[in-house]
Image (cartoon, rainbow, N blue to C red; front, side, top):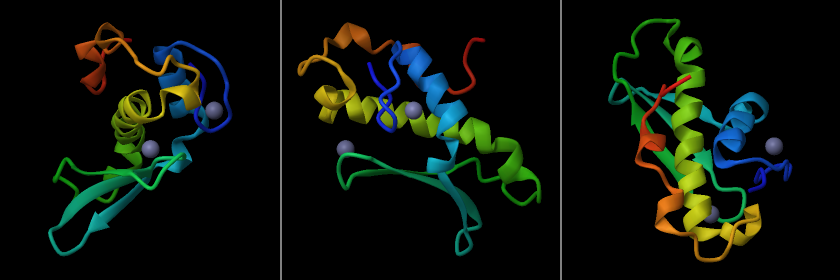
Length: 114
Ligand SMILES: [Zn+2]
Ligand SMILES: [Zn+2]
């Protein structure tokens, strides 16, 4: 598959890592002051859909955002890859109908094996 931002080729895992290393700035993290929660948002580069989620609500510590930026980006890009595989497979060099076996369940777990 190819990186949705710069078309760099790689496996899903490599692309996930590449997104983290090269495009982490695409993930916006911000505080929902009204609910005292942290949220992240990541827009799809190919359509108007966007991923937006609330992350760990223990966001009171000043260093939280920086400390968890990478972990947040990991989750955000995982969601983006699922969206791209489902909605824009041809844009990232995948067959139009991806097989279900190409989406391992473990990939949904943040901070997985390394
Ligand atoms: Zn890239
Ligand atoms: Zn999209």
